[in-house]
Image 1 (cartoon, rainbow, N blue to C red):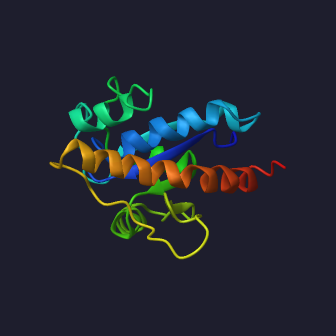
Image 2 (cartoon, one colour):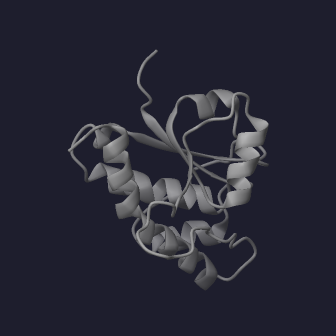
Length: 161
C-alpha cells in the first residue's frame, strides 16, 4: 500500500469551514519543501451531500486572501477517503466523535484543525453558516493562525526535519 499523499479537512456539510481549511492548507503546503509540497488537501463533511457549491461567503472570505475555492464541491466523508489520509483535521470535537463512531475501524489520525497550537487557546472552529462575511473572515483567520502548527505536525508525521 502506498504512503498517504493527502490531508483531509472535515466539517459538517463541507460547504463552509472544510473547503476554506483545505484551500488555506493547500496554499501553505505549496510553499514548503518536498515531501510536504506534494501533499494534496481534500475536504469532506460528516453530513454532506455530494456536489453542493461552497457557500458564497466562504468563497468571498478566501478571495480576500488570494485563494479561489469557488470550484470546490461538497462530498461526504467515506471510509475509503478517510483510510487514505495522512491526517484528518476536524473543526470540532463533535466532528471528531462522529468520525470515530461512524468509521470502522475508527481512524487514529483524527485531530482538530487547531489542536497543535501552543498554549491555552480555543481548539474548535465555530460554524459560520448563515453568518455575515465578517464571521466567515474570522473563521478563516482562526484557520490561518493554526497553519504553522499544522505544518510542524505534518513534518513530524512525515519524518521531515
